[in-house]
Image: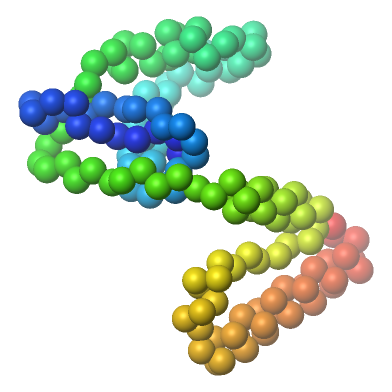
Length: 148
């Protein structure tokens, strides 16, 4: 979903989807597309399951699940404010993936961007350090009890 951009297709208040070259930041448009997909798939759990079980390709899934709904640009109410597509940094995505893997192995960590840290006060940093310490202590206690 994060590689799709909602674009205005005509002056008739219609929008469509345009695939971008990479993965973008997921903001309002990403959430709108996600809700639309959820709406389209509602009640089609069995069909989706069968397609996945049969290892159906993207084209077949699109034809069976989305083709009718996705065939034409959709009208919308009110004014549409287009969000610029902002590509995500591949290194940042790689780091997030690594953090998720570590979390799955029982090593939860928090990643901060430089911009996030630059605006913090000394008190903010002390609170963050205390939260990290508490999290590590809780993980150690769970490990001792054999819950991990």
